[in-house]
Image 1 (cartoon, one colour):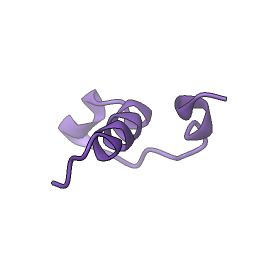
Image 2 (cartoon, one colour):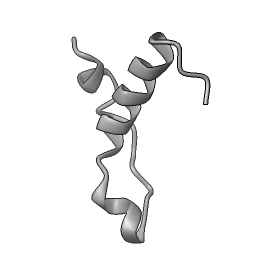
Image 3 (cartoon, rainbow, N blue to C red):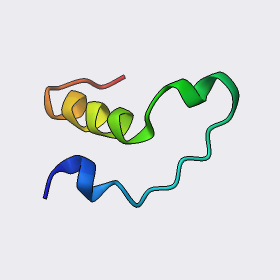
Length: 40
């Protein structure tokens, strides 16, 4: 199971300009950033 598959069930409630970003990709990027040491 990939990270994207694991979070596929998360519902995206974004509206307006925020809809241009895929929620699943944002979650995966956030997890990767934290694993690499990002803190903000």
